[in-house]
Image (tube, rainbow, N blue to C red):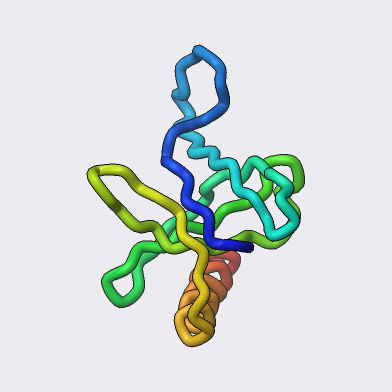
Length: 103
């Protein structure tokens, strides 16, 4: 995934109430293809907040992890480029997922 920033608006284009509070993002991959992604989980590590997103059309596919950054009271998803940071957050998420599967 390339480093694209997207606002935290629903972006669905529909005029309806979102009682389920589903956070949908349009994410563009390296080939320029746009996919609707749903935020399913957030967690913190070393003063940063991370979001796990699943493809809305294919929720069985592996999730994608982004760092959440804030600027002027808006939240943005930022791709993780640093290998050490990536290794750390994927290990944390894998442990969270393992713990939740055991419950």
